Length: 521
Image (tube, rainbow, N blue to C red; front, side, top):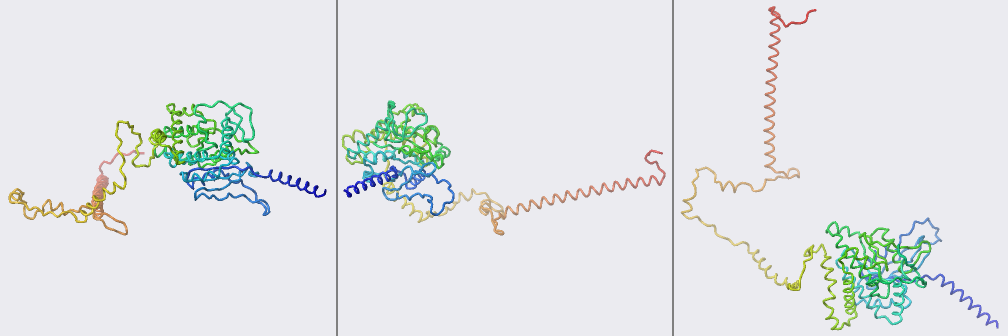
């Protein structure tokens, strides 16, 4: 009997300990970052890590300030983690595991499959990094990263696919996701809660190709848009063309789009988008995203906010349906290439259509630094034959004999030609000149071609110019002295005239002559 009571008491205590430990267990969130360089991924990770608030000096036994763990992303699939803190940075809301894959080529696809399980899929967000250093490569990079992600998700087992269907249904019905300013839908961050409001109907092109997990496209270094506009004369036409393609693609997959820069306000918006997409809500303040589709350096398109009509407001001639259809064909072809199981019939049937969206994008968005790129697109027709570009090595091989021949000619020097001797008839026609008169041709040859330079105290001076300047100064000085002498002569003459006039007055007084009339008293 006592043993039974002891066993019951132990079970009670074990249950209490498990409940207490489960209450302190942090929610696990997963973030998969695809693409971007090692530096770009580190920049993104630092952007979603808020700077620590200034804190007063703590005692040694009190909790020290947290330090961000290192990032290991130099080889294949990298990993790091971050503790998601509340606004006051006191409470830990969740622990976010960050998996980073810079190289998204098909051989690295098997590394992503262990990350997706029925337990992790509801708490996973895929982030695709793009950089404003090379926006002309965005569409091809986007296709490569979407295709590797879609190929991995399509290869999962049935349990994972059922979980992905549930997650996508929750996002499609707008029961999960960030709260958007101006939206009438009751968004909630916790996927376990449900809302009774009926979901609004989907528009054309919305959620045509859900991937299975939510995605977010982050375009780094948006401040470089001003450099493109100022130095390379990019206009709103190019920026709107890029933005419309990205929004049309994300409309099909139900993703979000963020343009980020190096400012703290931009980092705060990106942090809110990532946290709300993962279902992490602050206990002190509710996060509400404000969409932005006008300012080119601070674009924010939340999930479930965009429509085909809003995309056409930038350019009414942009065909959203055609771009979305071509993108679906392009991604399907790319997924087959990643899986390495394409059928010949499907490949032959979609080869011309698959590259249409990429070729159109590359024609309109070109690298301004490329020396062979023109600023305007040249229209081509099917009747004009296209000349294939020659191989670089073959071209260099044809130029090698020419270079060697020219090098040999330079080594031999110019061919020596004998000076032609004038005949008797030519000598008779030459004009005679007196003896001692220099020849005109001889004087022209003997004249120096370049000025005579001399280094005087470390300063190079033109001797001829200095002599000419000295002569001009001497002539000017002589003219000034001549003017001064003339002025002195005039002064002497005037003095002599005054003396003569005074002498004349004195003589008149002595001889009793008349004097000038003066007033008498």
